[in-house]
Image (cartoon, rainbow, N blue to C red; front, side):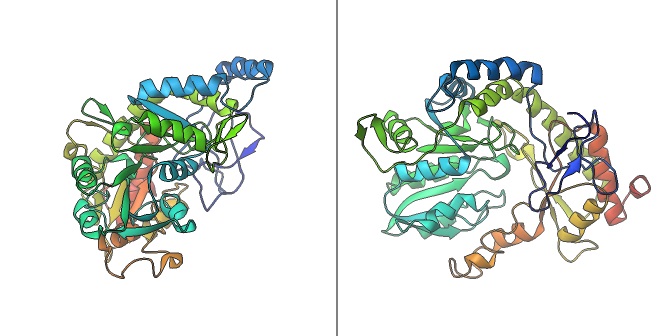
Length: 413
């Protein structure tokens, strides 16, 4: 990136402002002229690798409608994600809409109250479905016991979320879905590259939906995909994303435009070559965070992800959530403000959500989602991405220490 240009920090959601990018730095600068350490940063290909492929796109003059590179990316992702089939989409949100429309009949859909609003907004905006919100377990995933208790004769599906890339309780959910003859769709927006034993996370359930937004572990700038093991479901997904056209002369369904263009597919193919190294870097930083925070022994802070609790799972280290106990020296919002004052953007993710946004009042029984409520008011995601160094990690930890008056405060001053 050359100096003198401006861009928005990709992770400054809700707080975006143009910031000058200094030459040689992966970060924008804040108002005080310091490098602004964002909560995430996009994985991007080298310009030298990008130019010849974009030149080829221009020469082919086929820039969308299931072009050469989109088909190549679908094939590569089937292999990488270890799934039987997938359909690219223009975003993860569109992918969710396609999956629900392709699989879940009209009726109630049991879903989590702790996620990004894209998970359920499609259900709320379409009278065909009614979301039934239930609580999460101690690992941020939908609580299977709560799911089973919420099932009625009108229930048609379950929409679960692998929050922060942590797999849901897969066996329990799949058993519930089988017993009650329900469709099971996973929102896997955070879970790219996660494996459980020998299986890719996208091979579970009737379908899984991934987001390829720029803030995710793997991105196509904007984009997503839906994975499925059913050839019939895959055919329907591809039909729905192309306006319902079976061919030029046959409209076979009420579809919409969910296609991915060739430019974004090129970014995806190049990023796919870099994503394993990026995950490895994220993992090393996550381990360093854990070691340093445990050394500090701040009683108000609980680390949200413990790899030891997920044996046999390859995590992708998409996020590093911590929970800040209310009523202590500093609460979650106070810590976020303290870090921001020091040029560090940590995100209150997920906030607001079902229990903490007035928009959703009346859509659930008050007090029925206590873990969702607590998580939304206490969780903070610290910066974690492949552009960071160990020194960046130390900068964050020292700032956290300073907020609580723990060891390391002198460094943060």
